[in-house]
Image (cartoon, rainbow, N blue to C red; front, side, top):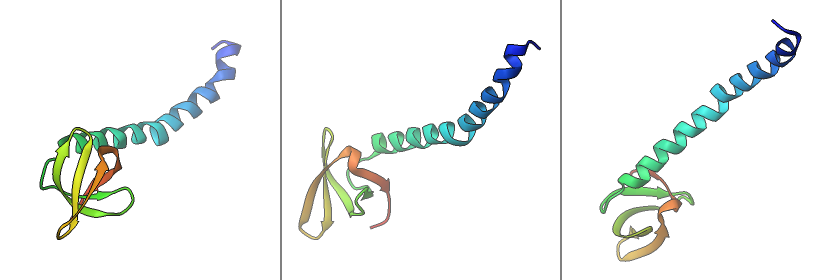
Length: 87
């Protein structure tokens, strides 16, 4: 190998390690979260990023109406949904 390649080989190896340990898993988590957000429908039980549990009662574009308890409804954005969950 040439002198230049030998000097950059440790940097290339470090980048590869960071990619497979940090970057790639984060991209996969983001992809799964995006797919989950796109699959949400009325009646799904969700938990917001802020920790509010609710049931989706209405969807208008990116605005969700969640029922958090009997006769109490709040509006939130699609991006505020953290995960599907049990209420």
